[in-house]
Every structure is written in C-alpha cells, then in structure tokens.
Image 1 (tube, rainbow, N blue to C red):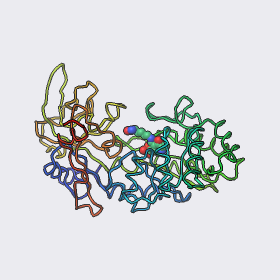
Image 2: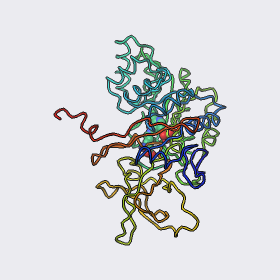
Image 3: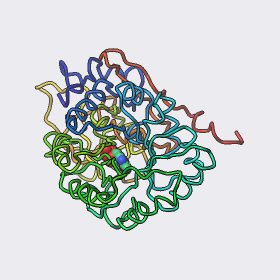
Image 4: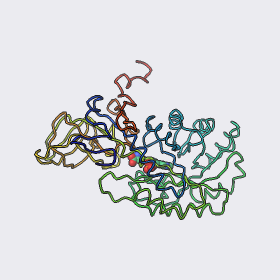
Length: 417
Ligand code: LLP
C-alpha cells in the first residue's frame, strides 16, 4: 500500500474500494481520482498532531479546489484559506461559513477586498501598507467594521525547499518586514475600521525541516510580544508530503512539537493544503507509444504537463506505477522517460524510471497528484482539461465530480464563434 487508501489489491491499483483501471475504462484518460476518505484522514491526522494547541485549521483551497473536496473538508469542520475572490466564491458555494475563511494574497484587488468584506470573511491576512488603507476605507464605506486583520510577516528566514515555493526569505515578494509590521501595529489608531489581532507567517511549501519554521515563529512572537492585542498566530501551511516512499520528512506532529512551546497562550491558525490532499489523488494516464531513440526509451502517454505541471515546473518527483502490477514472470524492468504529447521539451511526468515493459493502451498512475495538480492544469496545446473523480467516504461509491472538458468548451468563451 502507498497509504491507507491507495495501493494494490490482487495486483490492481485501488483507490479505497474502487479499482483505478475501471474508472479509467469508464471515463477515459487522463483522469484524476481522489479518495475523500484519505482527505478526511489527513485532516484528522493534522488535527490530532496539533491537538495540544487547539488550532483552527483553514484548508488552503489553492491545492485542490474541487467542490467535492471542499465540501468534504468543510463538513469535517475545516475553515478555508483563500487567495482570490474566485477561491472565496468556490468555498462559499461549497458551503463554507464566511467567518471561517481567511483571505490571504500578495495582490488583492479592491474588487476582491470589497467582495470579501461584503461576504463577511473572517480574517484578512494583509501584506501591504496600502492594502490596510484600502481595506480600512472600504470597510468604512460598506459599514463592515471591525475587520479582523493578521499582518503577514516576512521573517527573512530561508526555508529549505524548492526555490519556487519558498516565501519567507528577504528577497521574496511576500509579507511585510518587521519594521513594516511594527509601523502598522503602532499606527492602529489610524485604521479605525481594522483590528490588528493576528500575525501570519508562512515561509514556504513542502518544508524539509522544522528549524526554519521555529525560527520564523520565534521571530513573529518576539515581534508581537509588546502588543497584547495580537493574540492570534497563523503559522500557514507547508507541511511536507513524501513523494517518494521513505522520504525522511518531519510529520505534522514534529512541526506541532517544535512550535508548541512558542505558542502557549495564543490562538493558533494553520493553513495546510498539500498535506490534506496530495496523497489522496492519482492521475491515471494511458500509454500511446513507446519510442526508442537516442539511447532512451520514451513512454509517450496521454497525460502531460498540461494536466500535471509540477514535474516540468519544479522538477518535482511523482511516483509512476502501472495500474496493474506485472506478474512475477514478466520481463525485467526497463529504465524509461515518461513523457506527454505537448510540444515542450519540459513536458515529462517522470525521468529515468524503472517500469515493466509497456504497450500502447497500458495504463499508468501518477501518484501523490491530489495537490497542485488539476488546479494548475491548463488548456495548453488546446488540450481539454481532464475529469475529476471522487471516491466517497464509504470507499465504494465513485462519481465524476467534474466532467472532462470538450473541444466546444475550449471555444466557449470566445465572442465571435
Ligand atoms: N498558506 C499560504 C500563505 C501559502 O502561500 C500556501 C501555499 C499555503 C498556505 C499552503 O501550502 P501547503 O500546505 O500546500 O504547502 N504549486 C506549488 C506549491 C505552491 C504553494 C503556494 N502557497 C507546488 O506544486 O509544489
């Protein structure tokens, strides 16, 4: 088993009680499949790990915004971390309580701020002095005060992760410097519609160790210590997921233990995304061709960087496995490049993988694809985006929760057709 929900049974890759090949048969490929049971189990694991701090958990919608996933997490009591008006809209449509939403983002537009205020969003994570001014004025105009604000602090701590997903170092566009945070806290009377009650610090995603987080939370605590009105610390998300079996990563409990001594007496907010959904999702693809040239074997599949961008964008590693395990008498494994049909050399799902000999029509599953998969999919090369299938918490019922796009969908928004 890759985890409690995803693994082989009698040689067939299962998502809980549902066979991945039968979903692929019914829906075609590429197709995303999610285990809602796994999503819920991940939420419970983080909740248990942080139990001593009694945190509010706000699921980071950017990781996977499908309504079925949102509904499942909301029903289990999760709040929402949204970074755009669109994410707030989706969360509300999925049944989120507005006051359970935190609204973050480095470039919120006036229209988004207005929408969030009108909807009664619970927290604004502010990263810009100008944004405070706009928010204060809008809240006054709309009669929506007081507005709860957490100032996003850039602690100038370099997280150990891929450079594209580190956010807490000095050169990053994210957050406010310590000086700016202090300046705003001192200037609270100038923002009568706002209540600076929280500090927010998120230093990156897929964090490889807890040290940088501890440093960041420590710095945040020192910063707010003179301001008794700041009672909430939002430590963001970033809890890592093992993309390779046995990756030596700290688990949520390690993060909780590391930060707990710093957070006694504060209300704690968390914003996990990946840790809730990544290992609950698969992308099933079919082999189109096997091409041997230039000393390499290219397995060309119908899945590409348009459906799963992470390998092309971050050199990310995702396990790729056959949906049917080869029999013991099968020929030996071969080292292959798993690539897609898109016209980019970066278009690969996996490099130098040992897979059983493959034929056109064979199906492969890309694992740990539930986070930053479908949400980052595009129509590049005019590829309709794939369907999403959710396996319900009973482990047996599955349904298409977003249908495959069609060629007509590709033209739907154009005005002159
Ligand atoms: N809170 C804030 C303020 C964030 O910026 C993020 C992620 C999260 C929470 C959730 O982080 P998580 O728990 O998922 O690590 N596309 C990239 C990841 C980008 C993360 C952006 N911010 C990837 O595929 O690895």
